[in-house]
Image (cartoon, rainbow, N blue to C red; front, top):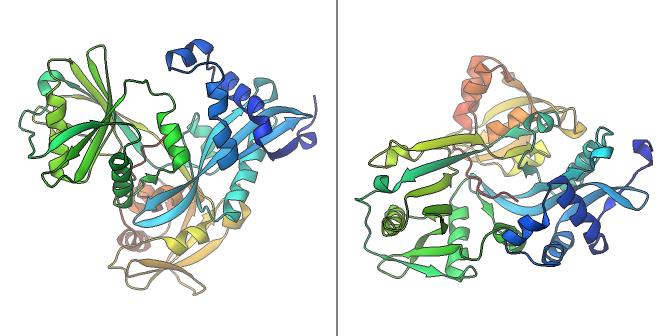
Length: 402
């Protein structure tokens, strides 16, 4: 078997779509029967991959002319405390089993992160198939997914709103504009481009429904995407811009109580929904969902929004990053009236932490105080408290799984 250094690494072109698709299907064991049950026919799945190779950065490792390992990076934008960041969403990470253990994926990941840095994508995201594996490469958990199950008798009976709900087509302009508005006001939310919307619908059944809530001024204020199957309403997504829209959507759900026995859905706010229900004795399950990694700490801080009350607070971050050398250093950051800047000034307020810990801290998944208690940050308590006073604390809302 060849040594790792002899493999050819390059970005895939549309001519590589067949090998790209074959590796995906083998690695994730997607069968023809599963494709048929999801509504795919013939070469539709292969044709659907062409836009990915055209609009995403797909890096592959080849043994002679055979693709044996690959990683794709979707270019997206993300709301991080009301600053719009260019991010790379890592997906399609897979290797044929006979080529595992040769360091191929580590090489592909490193080159992909280097490319992201060049494109000023200072943050990377992924859905992990192995949290321990990605932690070794500087990734950390940054968001949760809460799944819930509500019996028909527990659907809120007091939820009512003066507007109305209308079912619309998947391509409806109000529907997509609503998500854009929601992303613009929600920390952690991704702005969906055409590629992301294609992925959003990739495996949905034809009878998946979009319903929009309109207020009395005909203004769209919220929507839900759902499927009713086997007496269960499966809510793929529910977002709302106002409390009225939230009530209106639950009223719409209650209108189906003669058709369903249960409502199942997911929440990405990090807050259980039980407290909001009249009968909060429901089943909820929380699990880590998305992992993140700061690609370039200096680039990231230059756009980062801090607490508006911060007044020229200077903190030095002694960062450890064994995977990306440019982050393995100390930088001083000035937090001032909602804005951050990297400074050359010297300060005695110092904290020591890994790039993974810095990522989960700055995205709001954990506070500095909590990370300090866990032994993930070194520093004096005064500096830890000052750091928590400077940064914002809001759990990221990341619902997209690319």
